[in-house]
Length: 263
Image 1 (cartoon, one colour):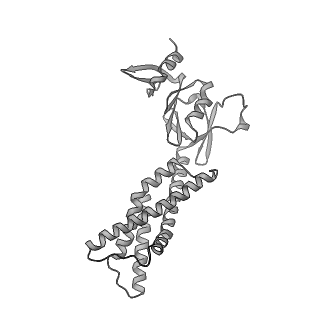
Image 2: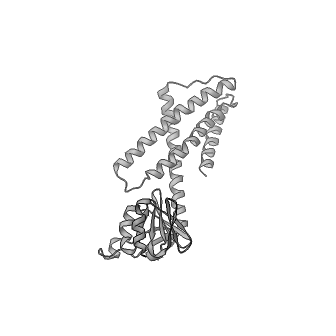
Image 3: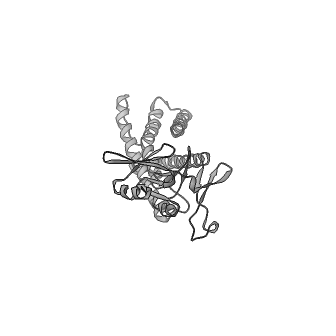
């Protein structure tokens, strides 16, 4: 989908350049396609970096000023990198096609001109990315624990809320077999379904420890009631759950997990 958006913008800009040249009585030729195609190609090359950055440091209205400043600097870095890579590509391709590439005006003017377009493209990419994530979360169902007002502070939460499209429903914490780390999310595994939750593994470990959950690995928390057995394969240890799922156990946690399972 992101590829389609970039290609669409590239075609619009290239055809706009062709129409502007036709209006001025100038030949169009292949130059508009190389000019805008090179810009689009560099955007596609930078897309994985943009996606990774927003996965690692997502934006939200609740984010502090430092997060917003980081993203502003990222936009500037994206624009500068795109500008120099794009012009380097144009300078390499034009002679191959029998022409010479020259910037129109000074470098400063050319940078400001291209930055205006790249800022728009970057904003479109970000809007698309967050709309896609929002839609995916609604389709898959995103989990959250009820607010402080909905439970006594001295008692752990015993259920979580899932929002899916226009539905909201509760699922018992006891039905979670294990929790898997997934970048900025954790995945609550309930039967054959997984619900993402925006909470750190450390906070989930603290929250669910009174309910019989154990941190068995830096990327996994297990409901000990769902464990069938602890298996050793050489130096590696795995927990096999009652549904057949296997979860790795860190070497430093083996003794504790073995004692938690009992004789």
